[in-house]
Amino acid sequence: MSAATLKDRLSRHLFDPFRIVLSNGDGYDVRHPEMAILLRNDIYVALPDSRDDLPERAAWCSLLHVAAVEPVTGAHKSGSGGNGAGSA
Image (cartoon, rainbow, N blue to C red):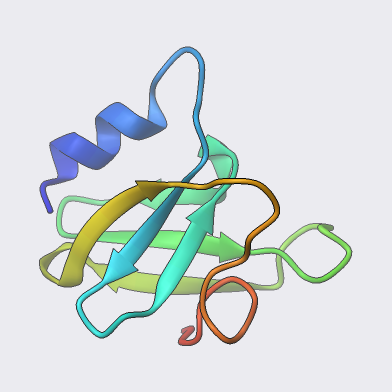
């Protein structure tokens, strides 16, 4: 996945939440553009706790392992951990 594609998704005037799916099947929801930090080769996704309060953790994802970017639909949470099975 290119950084340009993710930059476009994060900078849209009308932001649409999306899920980053990694090559190992893990997925991370980006429900607000401020919940992700895009770097040249990586993206960090903040993982909110169950109260949707300020995040305490973040998932690091190499862009080499981003297999897909999908729209987030409804209240569905990805992965077995609610917002992704793996985290940093």
